[in-house]
Every structure is written in structure tokens, then in C-alpha cells.
Amino acid sequence: MSPAHRSSSPHQTPPPVDGQRRHFQKLLAYLRPHWRQATLGVLALLIVNGVGVYIPLLIRGSIDDLQLAFDFSQVLMDVVLIFILASLMWAFRVGSRLLLFGVGRQVEFDLKQRIFEHLLTLEPAYFATHTIGDLINRATSDVENIRRLLGFAVLSGANTLFAYALTLPVMLSINTRLTLLALSVYPVMLVLVQLSSNQLRRQQLTVQQELSNISELVQEDMSGMALIKIYGQEANERQAFQGLNQRLLEANLALALTRNMLFPVIGGLAYVSLLLVLWLGADAIAKGVIGIGDFIALILYVERLVFPTALLGFTITAYQRGEVSIDRIESILMIEPKIQDRQGAIALPRDQVRGELTAKSLNYTYPGAKTPALQSVNFTIHAGETVAIVGPIGSGKSTLANALPRLLEIAPGQLFLDGYDITQIRLPDLRSAIAYVPQDSFLFSALIKN
Image (cartoon, rainbow, N blue to C red; front, top):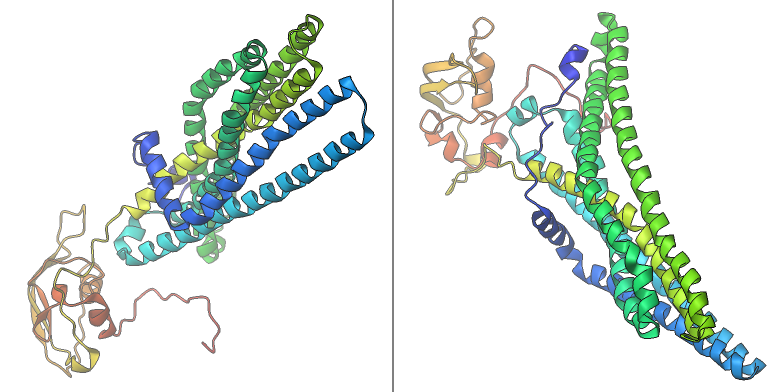
């Protein structure tokens, strides 16, 4: 295959994005089997943020007490209490990470299992029209993106939500004016995030598609290495890989450029709020508007919001990757097998099979073809007979052989086994009664002993 033919993949365009709601519903469906573990992880984060809000209040009280009179024993008690609370925060934070990252790993396992089991139900024609490299990439790279989304993104998103929900009311109770001034830069952050989200999604989609293209080339060349060497195609394949690798590099650099322009700006704006508090808070202390303890507590609270706000950029990246990957994975899982047991399929135990085959006006045309591969074929092969079917290339011998075990979807009422329409027999029973040796040999990875 020439490099030009490898420049695109049949999977270049995934199903259209229906919106945030559909993706959110899919994420909930992935999480549902592990909701207990996820709930415990989120509750642990709630405890972490609750304790984190209480510690600055404790420090404020200690500072206010020190302004009245120095009591070493009281200071020591406050230090010990803060140490215990900080240790408690650390323990619950570690627990939340183990729980939520564990959920991400569990979902990764579930999705890989679902994809593999679903691919086993699809007919061979599906794999003839869909590149193996792209399918492998969806079952690995895209699943990993969803794992990161349901691990890191859920953790940082819940942490940010709790940090704001618990911290802001306390900040407003200390000094409304300074709090609002500190938060004045946050609407700018939200606008930047909104403007950049669609571009990040498009660039992430391009990266995933280029990764699929390069995976397809590597898989194909590894399978056909002998032919590449026989026909001296090393230079062509090297050039083809270089072209695809260059496109993947450019897609990754474009995504990195957008991220590296957006996220430092978000982090910088978060620190601007801290500078505003330092600047205006000193003046408020001088005028007696707030006390030193309140000022220190306010600084600690603003600093508490800096880290979750700076993490917002990484959360956005994980979410954009996850959205793209959800569409790419669901486009596989939504494919219905064209060949499957019909409603009311009959069982045919192997010990009851005699082996009489009958064709009645058998016709089959491959999808997209104009000329039938089989047309008006009629025969009866009695049990115990040995029959050879010969003919020139393209006469339909392989098509007939593939129609018997229903590797092709033929219409009912044309092929019969022991008088039973093969389209009405359960697929496992039908195929277990047939010994099939394909013309293209394939060896699975296994020991000779096995």
C-alpha cells in the first residue's frame, strides 16, 4: 500500500458530538458499577476540604490570642492540633486518591473487556473494512484517556468544587470586599476556558486519529514484513512512517501549544487574586477594617483556591480527551453484529448432526458489488458423501465455503443442514458441526504443546 493510501483512516470522522449531557450520561454509566467506591472517594475529599477550611480558622484564633498575651502552652496545643489535623487531611487525601484512581482502573478494565467481547461478536467483513491499527488504538489509548478522566479529572473536579463551596462562605464572612476583589479575576478564567474548550477538543481528536493511522501502519508492516523485504519496499515504508509520524508530531505540538498558552494564564490569574489580597489587605489592616488574624486566614484561603484553580487546566485537558475517546469507543460498541442468532433460533446438538447439505437457489452479492458471487446455486450433498467443488478464481468457491458456517450473512431459505435452515440454527451449534480449514493459514500465539 502506498503512503498516499495510508494518509487517512476509515475512522477519521467519529459520530457527531451530541453535547456535554450525552458524554456525562456515558460517564455515569461507566461509573455505575463502582458507585460505592467512587462515593467513598468523593466523601474523603469532602472531609479533606472541611478540615482544610477549619485549620486557617484555628490559626486565626491563635494569632488573635497571641496579640492579647503570649501563652507557650496554648501555642503548643494549637501546633499539636494543627499537626493532627494536617495528618488527618493527608490520610484522607491518600485514601481519596486510591479510591478514585482505583475506580478509573476498574472502568479501564471493564471497557477493554467490553470492547474485546464485542469485537468477537462482529462478522469478518467488519474487520475487512475497518483498520486493525485503529481498533487497537481505540481499545488502548482511548480507554486510557477515559481512565484518566474518571480518575484524575473526577478527583480534581470534586476537589475544586468542595474547595470553593466550603471556602467562599468563610471568606465572605471574614471580609466581603476583599473576597470579591480576590475573585474578580475568575470570570476572565472561565471565559478563557470556554473559548479554548472547542479548540482543545478538535486538536485532541486530530491527535487520536493520527495515532490510529500510525498504529495501522505499524501493525500492517509487522504482519507483512516478509513481503516488504522480498519486494525491497523498506525505503517506501520508511517514508510512509516518517510522513505519518510527522503528522502526529505536528498534531501533538499544536495541542501542546494551546495547552501551554492557556494553562499558565489560568495559573497566573489565580495568583493575581492572592496579590490583590496582599495589596489591599495591608491597607485594610492599617485602617482597622480587619485584624491580623483575619488577614492571615484570608491569605491562607485564597492560597487554598490557587492550586485547585490552576489544576482546572489539566482537568479540562483530561475532559476533552475523555469526550473524544467516549465517541470513538462508543462508535465501536454501538455496531450491531450483522450475523447473530435470530429470535427463536433452534438448538442442534452435535451428536444429532448427520451432515446433509442442501442449497436452493442460493444467491449472494458482496456489499457494494454489482455482480453476484453466487447465483442460483442448487445442490444436495448427502451425509457421508465426499464432494470437491472446483472452478476458476472468482467463481464463488470461497464464498460458498464461508456461507456454510454463516461467516457471510445470506438470506433465509437458501442453505440447509439436515433439513434445517442454517439461518435458524444457533451459531455455536452450527459452527461446532463444521470442520473448516481456511485458504489463508493463521497461527495464534501459543505453545506447540497447547
